[in-house]
Each structure stands twice: as structure tokens, then as C-alpha cells.
Length: 427
RNA sequence: GCCCUGAUAGUAUAGUCCGGCCUAGUAUGUUCGGCUGUCACCCGAAAGAUCCCGGGUUCAAAUCCCGGUCAGGGCGCCA
Image (cartoon, rainbow, N blue to C red):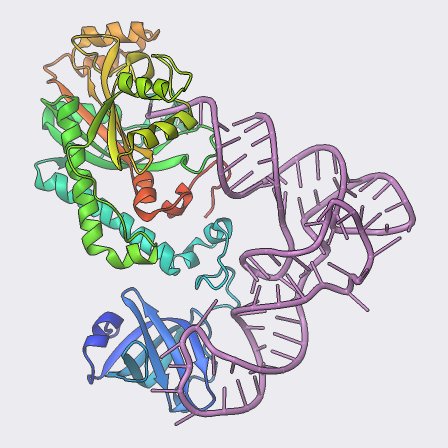
């Protein structure tokens, strides 16, 4: 297009004739001298205009896109220590005024307003920091697993029937058939892992539940792994390492973003994470005076209390009653009422859950019956394990949820670029 | 699906309890004018709000009552 230098680089190349381009953040007009603060993906720089003939006849407004030719110089007067002296300023595109959302945080626009104007909100430094970090989480997830012999695979998003049961599905017409949006890549992870051994995927999933909470969305992205010749403890170890890899990397490479979000104190938990069994959790709560008996699910307040009582930044809740987990969760050899399922609690919310899966067809049928389900409806699923399926286990991390914790957001909508909830379908 | 709270210029808020003094205040943005070095520049002026929608009470409603919609929070549902 044209030879452009990013602002970050231009600041280092003082004295050279360069062309920078970006958005006008604000202007300061002092009659015979004008200042333009320009932003691009790498940062901001002040353009100091002494020759007023350089300013195009249209005065510059916020978010106008301009191209500036000139040179960066060291400056004792400018606070940043560097400023840009223009020789030519050209408007590439004007912005309508005033802007419908505040992206400078002079007046903090509400989340709803920001989401309605999401494309503009992406120019807000805070929003940019959130998604820069999210991108880094994804990069680290892929990096760690690829480096450790896992293969990325792509599950389908249109499926013919429920893969887990439980959650409501979004139906959709599929030619002359009825299909659904996937609520989990579960079956496909397993089918890949029993041949490729170590696989992972990043995929969207949909839940048609009418929930309306700060931690739920109807469309989310999951980061999943599945591994053959593995039990629940094997994959819990993997999860710890993946999490620590991600957090250490972010602490190192996203310090600027963490600062913008006031999360500079991000703590990287030490491995191994504490393992708390479901039974222990019940006892902890009972000791604290909670009315709860073995077999009950935790209410939301009990969940919060439990996290406080355990007092760890990150920990596992494992060995759940079979009644509370999916039918494919492997029962323990020493107690078939308990399954090899776990949740990982990080920063006070559940960011990951996993299980060792049942790989023996007859046991699957038995567990389906135990759950009150008819094995005949699951025969095509069961069939996948009839031809030499090794023992295997896996887990999945909710991308938006882990982003929430790392960025310190309390509403998950902040952590989805274009969130889909009960009401919102646009943009 | 239930409970609580809210909805006022582009954005964000005051006013609402206790109806009239609101011809709706303030900040910021916008437009115009002034100012050689600002840095959230400053100073001056102007424009900008059928006070969410529908109904009711009243001489009088942003303000009280009922219904709806949407938003935020709590729970449920959901893993």
C-alpha cells in the first residue's frame, strides 16, 4: 500500500524520514501550534505541528485515519520523550462525530453500549488488552500441546444428536433432516484420541440454556485435549502444566496489558495443585456449618464458601459421585459410585472439567442404565470403543472463563469479542 | 423461570424518597471563537433530552401507581 512504519519502531528510528499511519486519539490546538496524538496497533505518539499549512482544511477529529510523513525526534518538552515532526499529513478517512461510545474512558461507557459498538470499543485500550491476552492464552495453549506431541484436530460443529445429554441444544434444519449445533466435541475428541493418541482442539460450542448470569454465554469457545493411555491423574498433570505455561507467559509478555487492566499481581499457582476430593469438600462444608450431605450438588453460595475455605488460587475437585457427572465418566475400581471426574477451580470459578472416559463397551451400557438412559440410543457412540479403544481421558477449558480470571473481568461478555447471550445476537 | 435494583442529551451522571421552584443541572464529547509547547491543555460561547414504551391517578408527573421491554446483580437451570 505504502511504506509504513509502526509507531513503536518509529520512536526508535529518530532522525529518519518515515511514514506512520493510524487513528487520531485526540488533538490539542494551541492556535499557532497543534498536537495530534496518533495511535496504531503498536502504541501512541504525539505529532507536533508547527507549520499549520500541513493540517488539512478539514480539522481533525477523534478516530480520523491519517497518514503522516516526517521524522521522530527526541524531545525534552514532550512527556513521552519522543515526538513526531510532520512534513505531510494526509487524511485517509474521516470519522463521524461525536463517537457513539467513549473509548478514552473519560466517561466510562456501559458494557451494553460498548457491545453495541463493539468495533469501536476495540479501540479502547482496556478492551484491546483483554483480547491481546486472550490471543496469548490461545497461542500458549497451542504451543505447549504441539510441542508436547499433541495433534490439533477439527471437530464438526453440526451434529445429529446430543453427545452428552443434559444441556439443551439449538436445533437447525439440515436439508431434509434435523440437526443441532454441537454442545461439546466430546465424541469426536474420543474418536480422534483412540487412534491419534494425543489430540487437542479449540472449538466453539453452543448451549441453548436460558441462563442469564455473568459467567454463562450461549456460545463459547473451548480448549480441549484428549489423550489415550491416560487416566484422570495423567490429564490433570497436563492441565497444571498447560495452565502454568499460559500464566507464566502472560506475566512475562503481557505486563503492559496486565497493567492497563490493573492485574499486575497476577499469581502463577505452584504445581502440583491441591487435590480436594468431593467427599473432603462435603466434610469441609459440613465443618463450616453448611447443611449438605454426601451426594448433593454444591449450591452457588456453597461453591464460593468452599473456595474460600480451601484458600488456593487453583485446585482440583475430584472423585465426584457418578450421579453428578456424565455417563461416560469412568467409575473408580474401589468404589463404583465415585467416578474419575474432576473440575479445576482457578480464581474462584470453574474453568475446566474433565474425566477419564469409559473405553469398554459393556461398561458404557451398564453406566447408561445406571443413569436411567437407554443404551440402544447410544449404540453408534458405543461402537467407537468396540475395536480396540485404549483407556483415555481428557478435559476442556472455557476460553472466555479463563480470560475472565486472568484479566480480572467479572462479566464474561467482556471476554467474548461478539458475545451471544439470551438477548444478544448483534453485532 | 424467580427475587432485588435501574432506564434522563453522543457518552456518563444529578434530580425521583417528600409531584409544582425542571423553561431538566453537571462532566465529557460535538460545533464555533480565542490562546507558540500542550500532554485528560486552557478560556469563552452555542447546539444537543418527545426524561425507555403503553396505560392510570392528579388542577399539575422525569418524579406516584399498574403493565411491558431492556439492562445490572443475586439464585435457579446449565458443567
